[in-house]
Image (cartoon, rainbow, N blue to C red; front, side):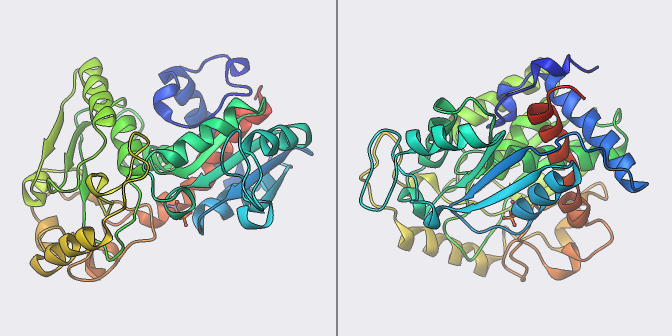
Length: 360
Ligand code: CP
């Protein structure tokens, strides 16, 4: 089931798609084991005196604190870097007034610590879709230490891994086969939510034997490249991957629903067209339309269409009738959002042990 831990030492975690199934299984096995140990008060000091730098260009509650606590529990240290107080690295090879080159920042941190984790999307990269992911890959290019994606405009791999860990706990690790997992768009008051959680989840769940349905209004598509990967993953597993444009249809018979807002890449600049202006007005008018219609809100009536599904969300959630979810669903008996949040800690300890520790 697991692969040689030496193969994971020093490996970046930017997307799970770039990892072998064997490698992911190893991380999940380590995470399960460390969680069991933690539950009885044992925290092996396998990252003794090692440092993880955590560079945040955006806000965070769960990601920052779970990585920080995880490093402490494993005997190491997590160093928080607010990008604005460390010369805000920007372009790989050029600097700007008050801003440092990514190349130099990466090489310097590489001399001090054992890992570098980064969160960057949206305004810090001028709303250009893909530019956050590109920046993380530029850091990785100039670092020999592992680089971890803590949420960019394309991927949130640690969120998807904790979601998978949580589902393995709820259904049993060998009972995911054929479960209907629904990743759905939902209305949110903010126009700029990244697509990362949806992308990472559909790429990962299609590799773990689930039948995955993704639902979104036509104005809020996912990245074609990610949809293609998800389709191919499902085919390889002999399972299904379906795209629908109606939340009610998606919820029919679902075992898991994950309704979450994301922005419209149709109205954002991209790496191919970085000078295009983001169309906030257009996105807001669509969000308002769907808020009034309540056609993309996870409510109790829609949950009745499911197979008594678990309700998932990465948090923070937009809780209001007309937004992502109503209070009765997120606070209801099938909501597993706090278990997911806890598993951020455990699954990231699994990743950290494997890539910073090397041999466990
Ligand atoms: N789910 C998640 O990434 O939460 P934060 O934005 O609080 O880190």
